[in-house]
Image (cartoon, rainbow over the protein chains, first blue to last red):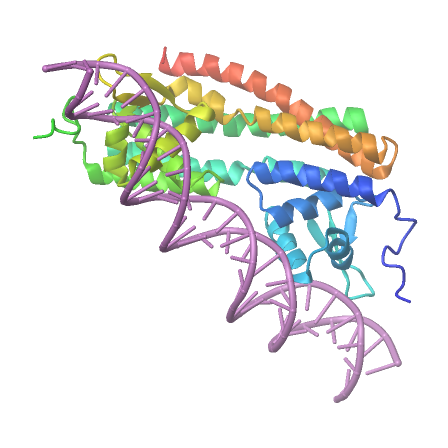
Length: 169
Length: 169
DNA sequence: CCTTAACTTCACAAATTTGTGAATGTAGCG
DNA sequence: CGCTACATTCACAAATTTGTGAAGTTAAGG
């Protein structure tokens, strides 16, 4: 017999409830633009007891192929929404959602904002700073720069708030 | 002869520069998850002198069919990123990007956040507030609620900042 | 070393999304 | 009252995206 897939601890907390949450949460992420598999994998990790799952566990729980798991995890890791850790002995890999880390990632629209800003700057240049369109673009650019700064401060405030309400993560 | 499509005012401000901006800005929006046509239409409006364009102008400038314009505009209007206005006399419709209005729209991830919050609340309930997973979801929920409030304040600060730096829009 | 357990990559079939042309609807104007 | 100028909707073809099975790669353990 395979060493009970779920391994550590009685993993059985109403699989149905878990699945229902995973699917409905993933659906919302999808609607917001995330790809389906990454969204589901992320949901599964969020809903797990330890915040970590192995590739095999993900595959079984979500009924998807190893290839799909691999692709989803690659995406999530690139976005810094999960981290990978090698289990010392085994060849098994663990994927983890750090409570902390992924808040940052989610607000890491930063990279996105930067690219928008760049495109807008180009536009201001080439259309002419003093044209009506140029002025409109300038203002838009200013908005994004403003938001950029504000978000940094907001995350700082969150860290304080979080520590007060939840203690160390 | 058709009444020169571009109609009002000498619309010719280096069409090439305009197009280059439109396409590169749209590309960034697409990468962030927006559909291509809405992104291009929005870019074109941003880069226009008056901030308004007719359906025909959009179609010609972007080389797309009336159907595509219609679809794109419907989407943008739903997201409150443009408004439609009827030209009094004509049957022609004008689409406008209000500098103000669309900042709000962009941060109107609010609707999205609300749905995430809802899904998370469900999850906390069904997995149990006192389980490890339940606690993780709770914290995530708290984060979104926090962000919600912060964004409202941020927009308020932006309005002040904007007025100081750009005067009335 | 050789075997085996894990992850990854690749080529392809299926499903979804996207944009078009044609048909349809509607309001202004003679 | 009918014609014309726009805009919208619909069905479909094309392009893109998505997930799978199979083959490939690497490291742990005998």
